[in-house]
Length: 274
Image: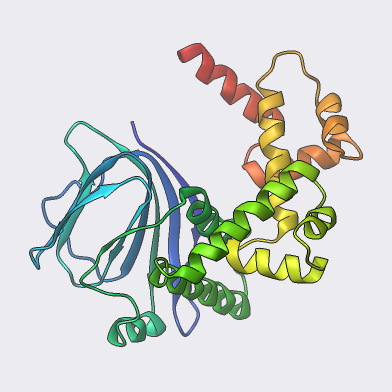
């Protein structure tokens, strides 16, 4: 059975447009109807599985993990894994005048609806960097979110260019430096950059600050420790460098979406079902 996690849902958009909804779909089956036409743009990024895409223009393409599908308004289409199979995907629904202008200016090739985006970790993090965090509340925040989406689309458009390959290689090295040191300033020194230059480039390429990336690594470690029976929250808090259990629990809930006890309970239920 498929599961859906909603990352972002905006009831109102900025005057230039923006994201209406952004989700991650686990064990998705694609478009169930034989033919579908949407009034908005949709970006799909497949992270597991494979399948096919076809549309009214006669375009029919294979889709593999690491491929993005860009659906334009008014184009009758179908996509999904093979019958009886499933895949995992992020999908972002967006609309607005600025994206209509992107279409008119042919900033992204409409005749190329399936685009290979590798390495997958890089693009997954770019998407998560855009859709994670609190929902936009003010018009200024909505505009900034729309600009962030345009930045993602621009990067997708130039994904095959040499400078993008160099950027991805730099980001992977930066992530490794943070993971090894767990100190952003030391990681910047390893990359032979000032902290400010390192922070700005990391944020531009990944969509989130190096500090937020470090926090995500800590929470991944926390998830591993929570899956081990008998490990106390106090021990996890100390191991990960938090000042107390309260601050650890608060950060975990903010990042993961469940409290540590809720996560541990969920993991326990999943393990009993295996």
